Length: 342
Image 1 (cartoon, helix red, strand yellow):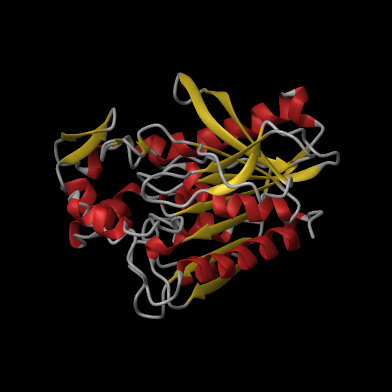
Image 2 (cartoon, one colour):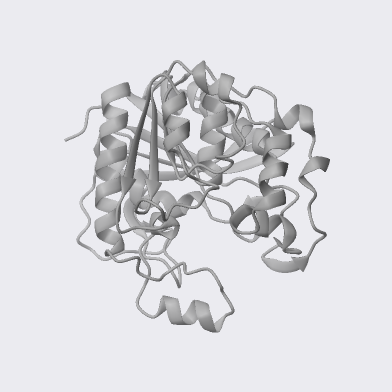
């Protein structure tokens, strides 16, 4: 975390904690954002050479009151700190927000073989809820039985699973038999990242993924609302499981009609879900969910060999897109979970 300028108001606290991950056999690195009293050290969460960080106060005292919990799941190859812009807005809307960095699919630690293990990501989210609900430091500040989940891309697939959806491995494999971009390109690409280094890896045959685990139920009954932004595995969900979901499911696609990739298109998923709603954010694209980029970051990434347009403008300023997303997501969660924000 970098140090921000002096003009920050003491309203959002942040702490880094370790959470036991039963699915992993190791601790998870988890970031918690919360309404704070004055105090702590001013920081910028997620600030680096590419992205602009979001201000908060590290280790600030937790403000009094009990609030709904929202767990976050980041996209493939990213970090939860990259969702700090959203977490900050959700704290101001009246929530405590927490999310893990998912081993095997996070920045510098991401391989095709680990990517389809969606049950591990769902287990990470449940482990975060377990820890905060049992920890005396947090249990009085959250309502763990009234928890929401927000996921982006592969993180939205994890959110789908913890909300009660089940995936179909053969459907996913057939999709990648025909489609050669996005996630399917990753599985065929032959590269991965281990210990922050690029490594060569074998092509992943999705049909070798553990079918029983891929298709198991990962539902957590404490989840009472889900927000799914560009959900991964969109072509691979079991329709009957979608029809049985009893909680509100808010689906959001980034992009104009006809521009959303088939791997994340969510209008059909929303229609199948009894309490689903669907929205699009015009003038955006999949990368618009990432933090705002610093000046010169796009050129720096190109010179480093980055092929994805991480920092290219989509037609609207990213700050404007974020503001719309903050309103959509906070409104959905406050409508379904409550909240004590402004």
